[in-house]
Image 1 (tube, rainbow over the protein chains, first blue to last red):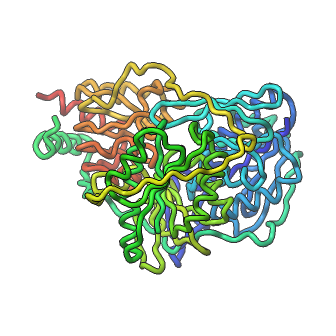
Image 2 (spheres, chains in turn orange, brown; image 1 turned 90 degrees about the vertical axis):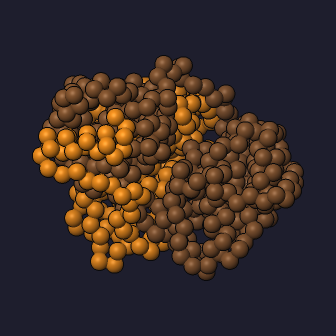
Image 3 (cartoon, helix red, strand yellow; image 1 turned 45 degrees about the vertical axis):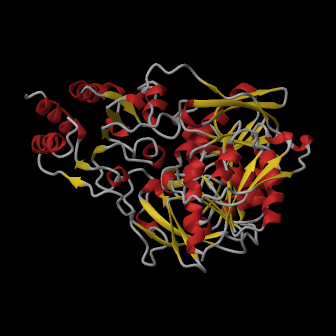
Length: 253
Length: 324
């Protein structure tokens, strides 16, 4: 089975947001990046499917040159090769442009299965995977918690809200967006890191003519829905003050 | 016209649809008083009648046997034609798992914008903008759709209040619209939805909840939170990553994929406050957040906040509670 995994590079969880002067995007020079967490689960699922059914795992990303950091990491974890649509304009691209860029580069590869995370931890549109399926002309299902492959067909467990699930069957080729927690992640071994150095990262240019569908006119710190009372001081003082307020103001103790 | 696409399960209306009706009415007002219409794909039960009874605007039900069980392919096919023929300026839905499953494909097929997870509407009648979280809620973006209408928008659950629907005493009309869907073009075959196991824990009934997030760092540190839960007579719960790691059972998960709770007191320990978690707990009466990161989004919904090391603060709270 020929499996593609679309991964994105996003700011680390510890990153403190700082804005560019025009306040429409973040100050990228301050940012350290990591692999989008749901995409890491998609990669792990692809590696497990390859172990079971054979074939190849190709990691794909549409991003500036800096993304090679996480493409190498994916290769070290066990992916066979990488496909990189490189363009600086992809750093802040919307889901339509990102999906269009990936579709143009991936179409000729004729993948049997395309996996990606259910959403990115940066813009969080939760759209790219589904639009990519539409552009590739293949069926899809989203927020998947289990993947079974049998006789060229898929049977997948889709998560619904509030603890409900549903099994969906569909033919291959297909695209799935993967929910975090579907499996236990593996980490790169030293041997994997060494092997990754020799693996191929093929870089292709961004396809022409992709039109953005939305524009960020302003980015800001979110306004607070509530007037939060912050309690300071040493741990013991803060604890004492909190308990007092919960008893006397909020009356919940 | 603004078109609301209603969500239902076997004809029973999803309550989030009412929140979207409120958002649609606010948007319609901002655009100078546009009418609101509602489309109900494959409605068999009470959903269409319930919407019509509120008198919010014309209701159209899309009728085809292929729409009885939800599949993204059938929904996209049915709605592509309906949206094209009704020519709405905006098509709006709640940001549910089902909307996430088919709306990106629908908008992409029509080459139209889709703005997701919207929490507020701003801008002018000519150029409305939509507020949505980015970077895990650390930032809020004001976004403008580009190109020709319609523009698709999904609204974050809980961002608008269902009880603020402007109803009319005049019942709206319900029109059945036959749509033609080629069965052979539907590639997904759905089975019947199910629940994994009968829940032993019903957190929705708890008066007090102590919830832990990534900040607890390891399973071995859980007793820190357990001791606080015990001192408060509270249930222990967690954000998704904790349950994904197997540190607490899935049935103790709070958030969009777990339980929705509204206790008297909700203590969030080391929870950053990703939106998927917030939708499950922001209705709590009093929320306390303890987190080392002063910028964590959890503080936006908290009544009381302490920035600091939970491993120092929590034992101090337990000691304080045990004083009397």
